[in-house]
Image (cartoon, rainbow, N blue to C red; front, side):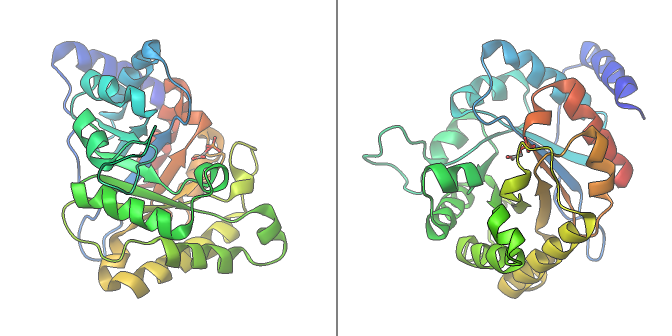
Length: 281
Ligand code: PGA
């Protein structure tokens, strides 16, 4: 189904009954492909009136039950967004690793959960750079979020300098090794987002071979750490994903979804990406 038809159908359904957006498990079963996850990262965008956009995206996403969809909004918008679209996955973009305490301006995992979030991003490169977050800090954040039952999207990615010097895979593998939670336990899921820093917001993306090579290396790292459970951790690609390149990206082996920045802010840009994920199966 085309996204325009999907949006129209979603609007009709929304008038008929209150929407429910059930959470699905990542894995369909042993050996089966993982259900694709497409998460929007709104970064520092979003005011009260943008809740209409959240509602439009949530409504349209109900037309693609084969795709898991989430929006990670600024912390201050989480509660209102979660109330606006009951059952749709609303997430935060960061958590503090501590349970509580003297950490001015920070948000704990339990606070996000309490506000209605079901997931959070951790270790985004914009935070790793600007807030100087280390791998071990990212690991603690991921563990803190998982321990309260928040699903986690953990970001890794190399700089252009590392890519150009042939160190991309080594850099990301080391980052992953230092940032992964020690164990996977409980109900909450972990996903990894591979986001080359040089591809974020630039319109540039790696070649399909480069994405495939990196996702295979990440898969190996996950299996090394978690055994067979590592096969069920979704690996998302992020960095300049948009309608025009989504189908090509989703067709790459071990690409189990996308983390989308700029193109997640508007329904008309985001929904075609969901449609591409649905077609990729
Ligand atoms: P972009 O951002 O899609 O705007 O490149 C992706 C991200 O930073 O998560």
